[in-house]
Image 1 (tube, one colour):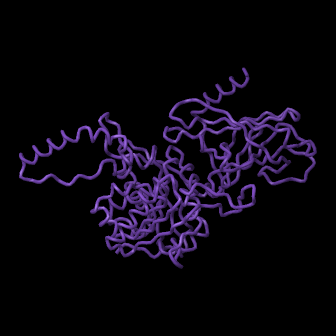
Image 2 (cartoon, helix red, strand yellow; image 1 turned 45 degrees about the vertical axis):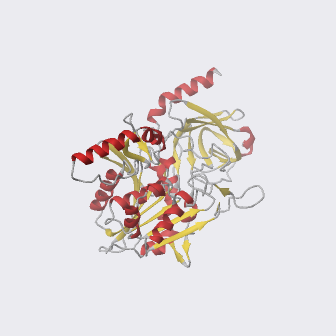
Image 3 (cartoon, one colour; image 1 turned 120 degrees about the horizontal axis):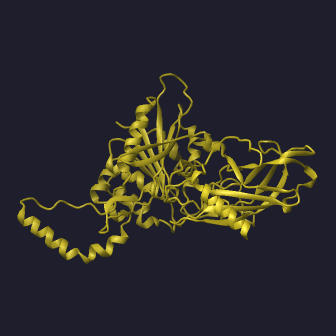
Length: 465
């Protein structure tokens, strides 16, 4: 117990300097390990670890059951501290420095295959990440094998080939830091112009690591062949990250804290002081010849709106190959809210939007908002069984209002449930069923259609006048 306590204390002390180093391939340093995160429909699950032992190990002495893999992670709660769990090891074998199984009789690289699944709370290295704290993720394995004298707990980095194709950076706008990841397609000609897809992550992917924003909802798929094939010159991708969540608004409550969408926390306060507000408005009306202006519902404009717009503008300025008439906005859940938020604030800047399972409460969209959105190309995607963000109060309700408002370039893809697409099955051999909120799995795997038209085929054809 004393050794475990000392180990946790040591990890707590080094956690501020833990950095998420992501590459397409990586060799673990001696007495260290590399974690593999290939990307699954269910999220950024880590399914293999490759370690570099100090001494050579005979292949015939390697057994999965002899290994233990404890995981130490930072709490997701808004507090400091570390917790500990255990990863299930399904296979162990001698390998080369890149994790490929080796036929050699002995060597210094060993691979452990790890169980993954949406029911396993330790598969996802970001699950326990304190997303709302301005800190890096902390997810460290302690690998032991008493029979072989192995005790490794130092980390070299993470192998995630698709995420490694992105570059990451951070911009600061009026003291608000916005981390981001970006990717540009290879130029096919000197004068080629390419569209830009801006992707907004969900509420769970805020923080200070753009890789969380990339992998949390598999935004890395945007640069894959299934989606890039619709854009003849390729499409650039920009993935900004909120420190907290896009739902943090510009409005503040009576304590001075910024409210979140929807502003349920302040509802009781608004109701309590409604009589005083009405008296104040009436008095102001009598003192002025002007009629009181129509008020925008509270907590509807994202605190990140201006910073994100500045980031997009700066990115386009630095990359003249971007076609400014073809900037598209997409996002999932809270990111879907951000799509509508940006299109309302800057209606002449973006060629189209594709919100997925979007979290903009329809009740907070005014008739003027609906009219403005009805003039812009939009494609909504949602699941009827979504219990996290109910379509009847968000996507479906807004879609119906836009149709009534005469929207001419309006599309939707509606699903009943959400299942795995890449062979990850349950115990009965059927595709794993995910939370119905996870429609981004379908959208980012080119499964969203309206009739015979694909979402991204439609997106490629959208352009500002």
